[in-house]
Amino acid sequence: MTDRKDELAANLAKVEWRIAGACAAAGRPREDVTLIVVTKTYPASDVRILAELGVRHVAENRDQDAAPKAAACADLPLTWHFVGQLQTNKVRSVANYADFVQSVDRSRLVTALSKEAERAGRELGCLLQVALDAGVSGRGERGGVAPEGVEELAGLVAGAPGLRLDGLMTVAPLTGEYAGREQAAFERLMDLSTDLRRSHPAATMVSAGMSADLEQAVAAGATHVRVGSAVLGVRPRLG
Image (cartoon, helix red, strand yellow):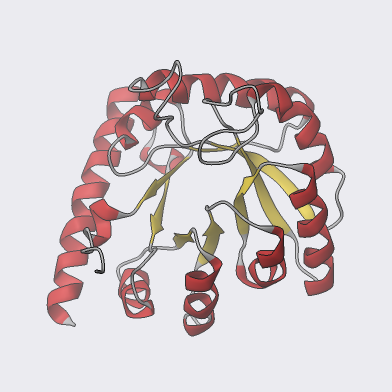
């Protein structure tokens, strides 16, 4: 366990150095950017070590991994973010442990989240996932609402009992006009955030950037970066 703690501590220090450097380059205070460690495929024991090392925000993208992990770590002072595509049949479970759902992208999901948040007696922070690669279907390759649909969906979240509209999230697209142009993609998200805050001033969160492109996200103005492999390492695939 000591070896693993040393490994995670060293990785966290490198990521912290990167974030601090990106903030300095952008003329932003370091405290402007919150690190969220994405712990998918890694055990609850790693989450405990991360908490010991000062991590306070963790994220998961699959409920079947997140629910038991959150239960096993319920005694820790952690904020849990759900960042994956969310099916409505998983909403009841997610509403019991997630503090934020960063992947809200359709009206049906808003309705389900509102119902289950009220049932659980909780308020869920919601980020709209924006698909900058949205095609004619209005959806992105990895979920998300098209930029043109942000205003309407935001209104639904803001008016839904048990939900709180906190901001926007995106994943740098692999296709379309922003493919390979991560900073341009994140700058577009910031423009959408500026538009959103005209009608919803409290929706200030901008979640963008992962292990490979966190510097570009910080340069564009992201308030939260979601880092997995740079902290936890790359697990070998099974099979």
